Length: 155
Image: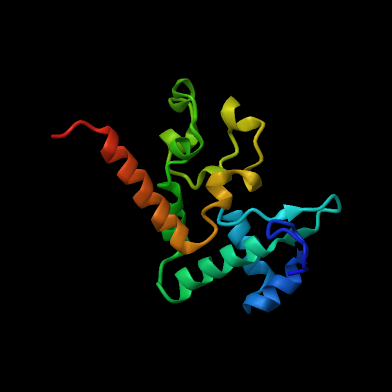
């Protein structure tokens, strides 16, 4: 990474990232189609990736190759992340929110956004950015569960 550059700055072209990770450009495009990654699209339409994107892609590759979890399995895990709890969605929108009511993919891959999310950039949302590393997903789930348990009356 270039010194002084944010880890979120999209600077790497798709071909360079593919070579770095030892995958094809087609594979990276498939990850994007499947909703596992949100590539930055320059005005020219060219895909660019940040250092954080590369780390997320490394997590995806490790999950597939080492943990032997399929793309559909990864999507299922990401779908279970309660984005509404992380960003504090208004309760009035939950019943119509596809991320809350559905199971089609992670919240950033859903096209029909409720008003609360329409003005937000998914690439900049905490749900997407904070969970770019594999270990952070598990830690976030633990944290949310602990918070929920603290707010529930004792059974």
